[in-house]
Image 1 (spheres, rainbow, N blue to C red):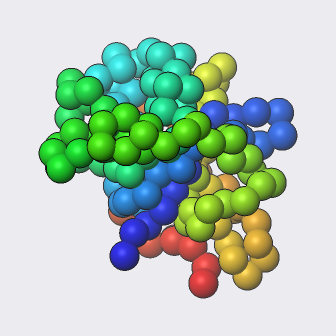
Image 2 (cartoon, rainbow, N blue to C red):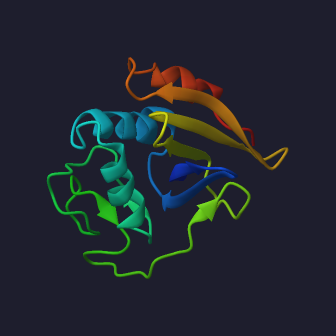
Length: 156
């Protein structure tokens, strides 16, 4: 079963984001975003946001455990970042998901703040139908203990 998530950028009203299907719990997608920022994107957050959100508006099947030196696209290559807009799938761009809009079933959202170099980690609380901020990660600070955030989880 998929753990769905959102990859987004902070806005004045919350966040705007694209969909991410697999492994979106904090120790999956959260850790991947932190590691991509420090590794592949060399702490260049504007480029990271452009690639992850603006260039792949149809969203992602999966980026966790993938090799970003490979061109993103949906394929059978498990280590290739799988987007829904390139490769074997050619879906049209979607309207960006907002904090107040349809969640597309996402359980977690990761909203990156370009000006503060932080990542806001949100969990969907179905009982109140709201996004609860679980953590604010300093992208230039030490890597968090992602498993501790996994334990907090989302409400049924």
